[in-house]
Length: 249
View 1 (tube, helix red, strand yellow):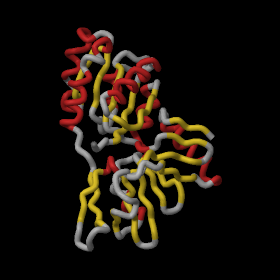
View 2: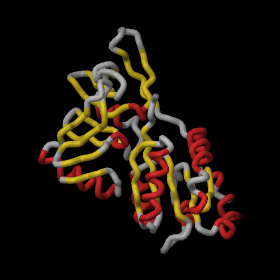
View 3: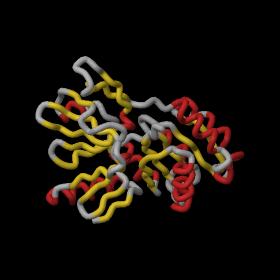
View 4: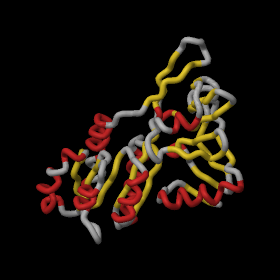
């Protein structure tokens, strides 16, 4: 079964809500990185340089409401608005349907609404694809969903697209790594070392200079070492990202 890796952002001043959402998303098979931001102003800064696949947005927040936040976003992602007072805000929510609002849900009904959330999200979500050559034949071209790619590995004049369901040299592009990075969703990748760019949503954890990208096609763990001189920059990137991925130096 193919499992897509997504990037979810939760903007909510109550940290308990992100724990519930994490449990629900993993349980329904919507797997990926979860980024938690407890302040809408910090979230605006985040979206200046990053994208996400789905935003869970609290309405009742200090400094600005969730709707104020949506109005300030230049390019709103697909959004689920959460509230403790659905009757109070329902009319206002409908005004944002043309700004990628796909559902408006009472927090107490979040679990029951999960099938609807998943259906609407998957219906609207459009994956990114990269066309690559296959090792099986000179003229074979494969369309690889970006969500399947764990990292890009530059070897001489080729860039290999390393996925979890095929040997690491199965798919390749004759290109520079810089040119490929220009095609990727903003904020979705990180160059961890020369010739190696990871897709962040696949990172399971980072401990003492080694990051884990899950299993390869044989079930072995894919690990990459971050050079010592790059670790501070790498740590700062994830601190600014507010990622909930296990991260320990």
